[in-house]
Amino acid sequence: MNSSVTQLQSQSALRDRLDRPMRDLRISVIDRCNYRCPYCMPAEIYGESYRFLPRAHWLTPGEIRRLAGLFVGLGVNKLRITGGEPLLRRDLDEIVAGLAGLEGVEDLALTTNGTRLAERAAELREAGLKRITVSLDSLDEAVCRTMNGGRGDVATVLEGIDAARAAGFEPIKVNAMVQRGINDRTVVDLIEHFRGTGIIVRFIEYMDVGTLNGWQAGEVVSSKVLLDRIAARWPLEALESNYRGEVAKRYAFTDGQGEIGFISSVSEPFCGDCHRSRLSAEGTLYTCLFANRGTDLREPLRAGVSDADLVGLLQNVWRNRADRYSELRGEKITREQRVEMYRMGG
Ligand code: SAM
Ligand code: SF4
Ligand code: SF4
Image (cartoon, rainbow, N blue to C red; front, side, top):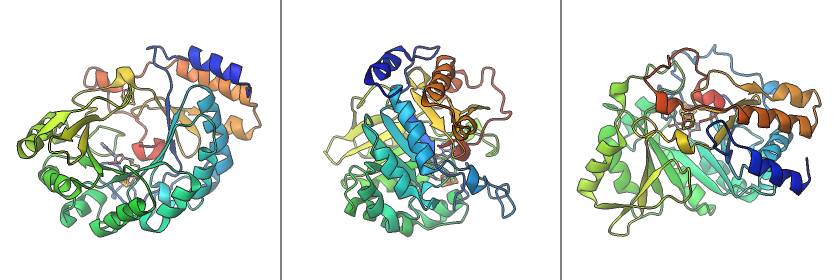
């Protein structure tokens, strides 16, 4: 499966049941995290005695590279490393270097909570990482602690962002998940802080991922409401998407002080252009963020299966994909048994 002809054939042929190609792969490299954001890993469930994956179950850097290479052969050109908290993985530089060396990868990005970024940004840049997104829900210390389970402080994350800038990452994005009554009153401060710095703030609607966060529709603040509030302070104009399937809707400040984005998977689902697949730390492939099951790739990988057979497995999974959870939300899907986001890779 190394010939470029075969690769081209697979690329042109591979479409899911809704005619969507596979373009992005999100790779979760770890299921552990130093935060306990209540909307993702509530502390009362993920306490001291919670048993995360044994390390031997994590895919190794070599295994991640091999699988990612096969995805790239099938049309994937964007890779994002995530978790759990990816910077808790000591061999992250090795993982990055392996992925950066794959031919055909146009974008290699990382999502992190930023707490360990100050010490590792330069090393990740050197390893070949292209872009960084830092999650920071609020600049208000008390709000931030409520949203991370009391585990970290704002200053450390800001230092991480500074270190990423100093290491040459450009542009850096800051993702803020917005939950009604918790941090919605602090979004304007977040923009005020980053406006004019080149850092792009994006607001994510609170999603019903997993089954443990007790999500309620009433806690979602729609992007439209936020947009109106922000535009009342700083006039905005809509920007074109950078590429088809871009999840964030982009807006520029009309005074030239940069841009912001909104990821509105609840109020404006974008399943029709969803080209994402997800690989968990233990090597399970998921075709939707709201999936309740996936396909184990680690077992065949470690059993010595050939690249051609693994590609056949990936093709089969993708061709059978019909996921469009967000478009169906509320119609017929129950909250049973969904895999948690930190586990499959956010
Ligand atoms: N730990 C890293 C971080 O927080 O950036 C990477 C993994 S985390 C699962 C990735 C993103 O998912 C974060 O930006 C987080 O805010 C977002 N997220 C987690 N749970 C969410 C939820 N219920 N709704 C919307 N976004 C969520
Ligand atoms: Fe950890 Fe990220 Fe989940 Fe927060 S959102 S608990 S930082 S994995
Ligand atoms: Fe993609 Fe599933 Fe989200 Fe729809 S609900 S955009 S198919 S991940």
